[in-house]
Each structure stands twice: as structure tokens, then as C-alpha cells.
Amino acid sequence: MTTSDAPDDARQDAGGRAPWWGGPMVRGPGTAPFGRSTYWRRFGPLLGLVWLVFLAEPLTASLDADTNALRVLGVVGVAGVGLLFALSVYTFRFREIPRRVVVGILAAQTACVVPMTLAAHQHGLVGLVFVSVTAVFLVARPPVLALAAAIAVLLLVVPRLVPGWETEDSTAVSAVLASLAVFGFTQLVARNRQLFAAQEEVATLAAAQERERIARDVHDVVGHSLTVVSVKAELAARLLRDDPDRAAAELADIQRLTRAALADVRSMVTGARVVTLPGELAAARAAFDAAGIEARLPGAVDAVPADRQALFGWALREATTNVLRHSLAHRVVVTLDADTLTVDDDGRGPDRDAAGDGNGLRGLAERARAAGATLATSRGPLGGFRVAVRFAPDTTDERAAS
Image (cartoon, rainbow, N blue to C red; front, side):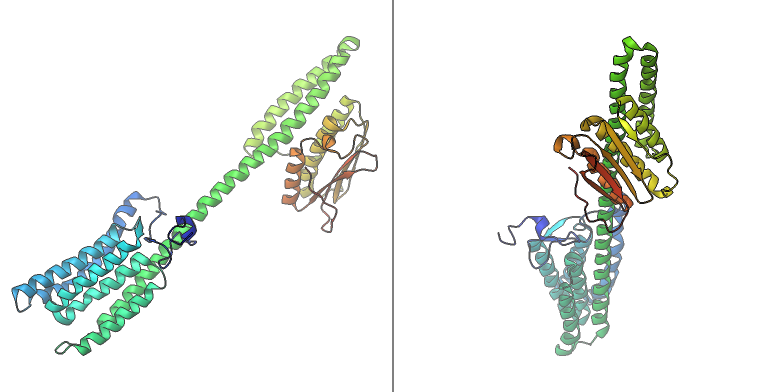
């Protein structure tokens, strides 16, 4: 694939501009509007047209030419340079510019300088300043500064070579300063466009992260709540004939759990969901009791730093859900210290069925990484599945949960 056949995005640099020397398109400095003000984008470039006032000198000199033909040529040349400059500044600021169009504009401007110099002599060389500025504006790449330098040299040399012309070195200085000023302006526009694009990308990533957070919380909160409700509903169904009072109590507990789950869903959408380790320990004990699973849980959480309790609470919630759903366990042991939460069961172990679909463990792994901890899953000493969340920095046995 040749350069001209490559897709536009493959030829663009970080600023969104196709390289002047390699592709058929040259982007104007404002190709992608980076501001939100339509008024400014439409009428702001008109401020650049104030530069046309510098054509007053060659226009006056052309009107003072010796013959009517020279006067007409001079006025036409001045008008051509000014119109092409205005066209470049206003018309092409938001468009991709074909390279042939850029070359055509610069060639036409240069051609207009010839009758200007015939009529206005050295004053007509002011047109080359506009050629330089137009080239820098349309191309806006560092190599175009070489053209600006060449024009400055011409402005210094030509008046010295043509008999009867006066040297005006200030015109060369003006060409250099104007070209550098316009080049700096185009670079500022390009950087602003990059900044605006980066801000949009950050906003998109933030929205994606928020969607992931909500999806993870929905899985953790709703999955856990529905699992406990399912266990309690089964228990209530078994007790309905033999122990109606206890069955009624279980049904009342199911109502409480569903209301709490609904409140959790509402709060997690706004990011206000707070998980506490003591609350999750109490909920885990109630869930294991309802499922008839012998559970040994820590009685206090004083040894755990406050900034780690939320992560351990989420980990305990996910581990409890996995035990109830997948393990077929009869016994669960939860150990807790300042750095580690470990949940062991005597169920089926770390096979695919025991680990479930893996969404909860992946979400837990993301939470752990965000908090600076690691998630490790393996076969535990009870013969079943082990879930461990550790804050120790030297953990080496972490493996991805799936």
C-alpha cells in the first residue's frame, strides 16, 4: 500500500494532521473544532484578516505607477494576494485540504506578487510576506519554516539586485516574525485540539469505568442477595409443614432481604453503597445457618485497619455466595487478620463448577488490585475451595480467577 492509498487515520500524527510531505491531504489548523462556541468558530478567523492592512503600502504604490496598465496590474496583484490570504484563513480552517489545493493557492499568490512588483517595485515584495504566512497557516508543519526562511532571503537579496530599488530589510524581518507568530498559533490550536480530544477520551473512559462498577456491584449485591433468598426459601419450604412458626420467620427474613437488596441497588447506582466487614460477617453467619453449613467466623474485626475492611467485606460477600451456590460444602472456616482474609470450605474444590462462572471473582480481583491487594484462589486445607485476599506486597502465588 502506497502512502497515498493509506487510510487517512494511518497518515495522521497525534495532532490529527496528515504529514505535508507524505500524504495527499493537509489539515488546516482548526480541522476539528475544539471549542463549543459556534459564534467564535465562525467569526473568530475574521480577526486574522486585519493583516490585510499591510497591503495598503503596495496598493498605494501601485496607484502611483507610471502607466494605467501598471496601475491595473498592481491593483489586481494586490487584490489577488489579499483574496487568497482571506480564503486560506477563513475557508479552509475546518477542512482537510488537498495538497494540490495548497500548492495551487501558494502558486497563485506568488504569481500575483509579480504584477505587484512591476507596479509598486520593492513595495510589492510585501506580497511575499503574505505568501509565507499563508504557507505556514495551511501546512503548519516545521518543514514549512524552510520556505519562510527562503522567502526572507529573497526579500533581502532581490532589492539589492534590481537597479533602482531601495532595500527594505524590515520587510524580511516582518516575514520572519509573522511566519513564526502564525506557526506558533497553529501549534497552539493543534495542542488545544489534542487536549479537547483527550478530555473526551477521559470522559468516555470514566463512563466505561462507571458502567463496569455498576455491573460489578449488581453482580455482587444482587447475586449474593438472591442466593441467600434462595437458600432461605428452600429452608422455609422444608419447615412449612413441621415448624410453621420458623418458616414464617424465614419468610419474614426473605422480605427483609429483598427490601435491603432493593435499597442496595438504588444506593450503588449513585455510588453511595457502603459495605462493612462486621455487617458482612453477620450476614454470612445468617446465610450459612440457613443453609445448614457449619461456619467458624471471627468474632471481631478490631485487628483489621479501617481502610481495608470494605475490601474484606466485599471478599467475604463473594466467598459466601460461591460457597452457597457452588461448593456443596458442609463446613466453612473464615480467618481474618490485619493483612489477609481467607475463606476455606470442604466442598468440591477449585474446579470449574466450584468456581462458578467467574464473574464475581473477576470483579473481586479488580477491587483487590484497586486497593493494592491481591486475590488468590486454590485448594484449601479442608479439601475444598480457598479464597484469599492479601495486602502483603510479596505475594507470589496469585493466579487469575476465571
